[in-house]
Image (cartoon, rainbow over all chains, first blue to last red):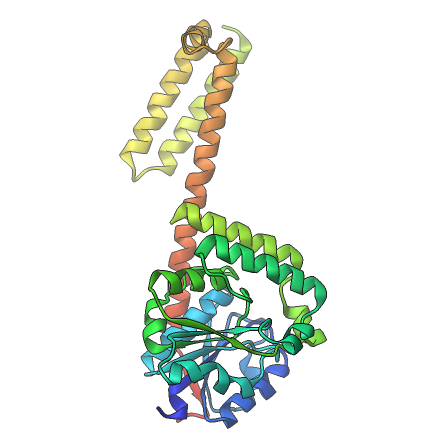
Length: 228
Length: 110
């Protein structure tokens, strides 16, 4: 498998220049980058400074789940072998992509889920309030999917082509994290958790989800159950 | 005729007309609007009728029965609208996503 068969999908909404260094790092490692601008006020393109990446743009803001789906569909169309979901705000380390995709590359799993809670040092990086919230998220995921993970709402994950073809996200908002698990479970895909370090900066914290939003996600999940 | 009866008739007539304009393409809904209007008229002129029906269902007063029925109808309508919104959202999402994939660009141009 060539390095460029690994497609890194980066949903972006109202990002600043941080995205440029993140994407440049990904490109320099030989991966194919797909930046999906989710209807930002200032087009994300402005910050990409001519980097050799695929640029897609939603005409209006739909949500991160929709952006990931668009990016994944496009990557499949372009013949991707592995699809990586990657945050634009500098939280994720491009150096860890290799570790994350290794289980898929060597056929040990279809889906690799990044986790902040597999090593002591990684979990110390997580702010305390967030840690409690994420543990609650683990429980919610278990209720909805029956999968007990160490970290339920980590946006850093990788899918094999076969898995990506089966995982068709319909949740536009942030409930997609749980939706993915649901689909993994239903399609009987082989999954594995991989330790990743998440770097919290003031910028990424500002962009991250608030406590309040967690309730929104929970309600989205319940409505989803009712209306599908 | 008491003045409240006149007011109610006028309101229901207006609602029925608006409904049949709004549902121009759906005969069932138009018929429903007419039937509901006729039913409302009957109950407005013979209010005691509601109490008779209420009693037979074990509800004390006709007005209480009306309250319960309208509450259920209200919840039903909210759910229908929610469902409709979701459908529209879904269609819109498909459109926006398809356009984004169609117009995908590579920089620098390859």
